[in-house]
Length: 111
Image (cartoon, rainbow, N blue to C red; front, side):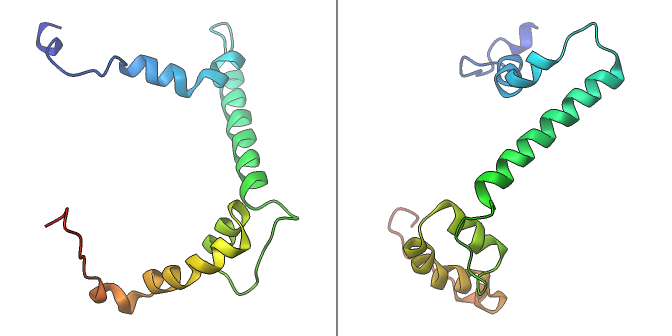
């Protein structure tokens, strides 16, 4: 314990971060539950979070473009059509494996 006193902790140790991350999950769990009940609760929580993500990103009724790939359609679901069209040329360039050698960084802060 004495060796760890000088380590930076940013006023938030690991236990606090885990409690913040799993706050909703801890509401459904208790120490009196069996292992099977705990696993059911964790899987139910994970399924609920996945459903929320799908509803937010790929919900039916959101804008979809058949010429876009899955990642571009996810962006289209989170942004406007105009922004997706602006970003499409950059995305196709970055996604093309032949362009890997074409990247040239011209940033004064990096040099």
